[in-house]
Length: 185
Image 1 (cartoon, helix red, strand yellow):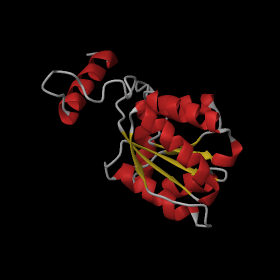
Image 2: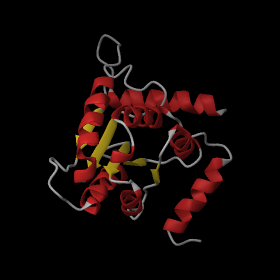
Image 3: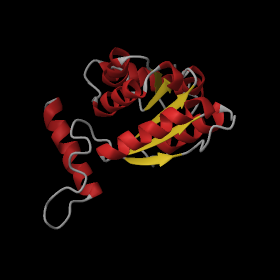
């Protein structure tokens, strides 16, 4: 069985899980036909608030189901409080992926990676976005909101959500990464 066959099986299982309406049409068709993502947790600190709000609208327009964990205004807050909420939504299975935006994305990446099962990637351009998914199977994306235009943030998030993990030779490395988390290496 090749990777494409496995992908079709996984897609069928997900379609069954999310359900199709009685007319046989998938109510979420078109949301993301490139990868199996529907539910996305988003969060930000005060420095990323405006970017998060714009990104939420954009992702909603594409059909994603967004869980906003805050912050909900521009009052000063601590990014770890929101980064951990995003990471826990993903680690707990409530969302398939998460996106956290702060001033530079660095601190949030560090916090998210403290949560068991999270592979957060700080990305700053499309090349790092694609690499984080294809090679590292990242499940949380962290971004520096003020470092990019809204259009750039939206494009990076869209590409990240649609990029599949390549599997193959990368599985060995992901398994080693997760073994470190379990203190096996």
